[in-house]
Length: 496
Image (cartoon, rainbow, N blue to C red; front, side):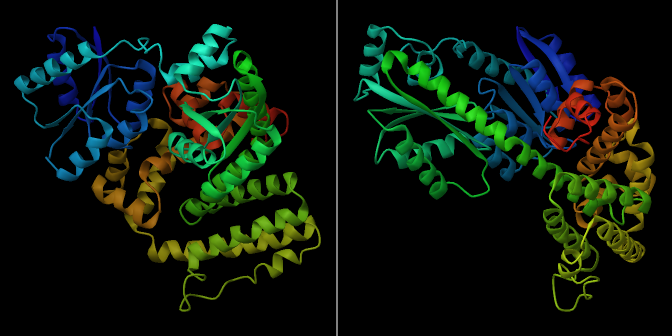
């Protein structure tokens, strides 16, 4: 039986598809989703064979969901459905390998005809374990990681046309686009080395055939990485030793071990940067949009953690752009000559502060000036419907509210409220309420004795597993790791 997931935000459509699916031979319902984020969760949980995907759904649209998962689940078939036949949507769908594109309302005849076509494609699909015995991918995924007999090694050496009996393995891990960057690095190295490459998940695995010197290869590799990759792209590397073919598995293990050590060494710095960035984003979004005491507390927690974990001078340096961002958001003073003058002489005032006591006194007064400016800006330029919606969200975020609920409270249409969030809040409804829920979950983990499941419910998530996934995505920690870090006195800003 082939499993089917139905994704649509209209209950009549979900019910209709489910009803027709019951009489379809060879198919069974795997689940139903009503939003992009719920679809992502169910795709990973149930791994269906076929997904009927509406395009216009809350949160991530249908095409964005497919783009997120189609490389991880290449055998999964997707059938799109939308109320309008639009060329731009079809154009986006083609590179994603979408099986069919249906225009609503979908008739019973069209539904069953599409199922029959999908069934034929699924029947012809080879089983996942069926790999060609001589494939290069099989060599990199399995053979290279185990000790080989002389006969096996010679066989593979001949198949892959490797020029030497000896070789060295190195691994690279990228923050994104592993296949793209891995191929680029392999091409750059091929001018000096005989280099074979294969992508494994988010890592690139490289085999250099020949008597290469390990330190020379490292130096060359670092030079190529610097010249070929964007400076902001996260990357880690591990290089194994030189071995004969039957023992190349040792080089694999050494490369993996070195890569993991490098990730561990830089992990703390990465998490600190992620934590700082998250808090700055929260400050910029919330100042003027939520009660002053909430923003004041967020600011205090931010600078206290920063000054606790950083050298005093470095902490002051990091606070300069924070105030610049906030002042520019509120007054536009760093955008053009017609805007108001900056309220502070940055960085002169901050960098002149001699100790933390002086910093606390200065920061308290300076932040109050920003709060006053935010209050004036909100009263003058913040649309009343958006203010009403935000007030409603803060009062009901734990109740599973949707965009339509907030729009009703603000007495505007959901589409208009969505535009207000984008134009005036520089965010989306989904991102705003998600950030609010996770922030309150952090507070509960710090200040209450609730378990993870109770915190998830209190923050507005009915599925603790989905809550944990979103919590990790935003904070960099699992809820359990965050709670343990708080107990150790880390405040959630250190290494879990």
